Length: 202
Image (cartoon, rainbow, N blue to C red):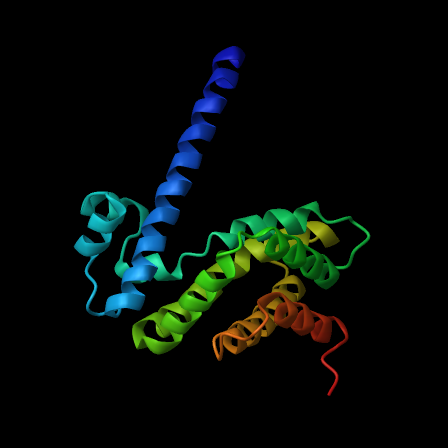
């Protein structure tokens, strides 16, 4: 049983990498078409054709057209990076260090893609509404990761309060990124979390 389980791991890892590549490819073509044609003017069928997948494959990865814009592959990577930070770092310092590590390691075109996502979400009302749901959904995994660092459950009220502050500060930084192409994504996030870590002085 053990040897079979170990033998299955490479296949599972390969499948997950293939899924991640397919998901990224679909999103890349979707964002390109939205930029070229407009969000409302672009259909799922057009996205699937550009990505060379079937519409049914599209829906296996993204339940709706909105989801292809809102999906952010960085969240699980960031959560893993938070867990990897030295235990002596406080929660917010760990988030700052993790964010720097993840963004510095991001591919060169990733920043431009995030700028495009931000522009699109801010310009399409249904995407703006759905984005609020996404922020709420991502709070619990971050609460679990931060709770582990301080020896509390992710459902702890004070842990969730801290995560709410982190998400709020992150939203402001994200919205600021969406205001113009000259915004430095990493510098804005780092400054936002530094301000939070200092107690939000004015």
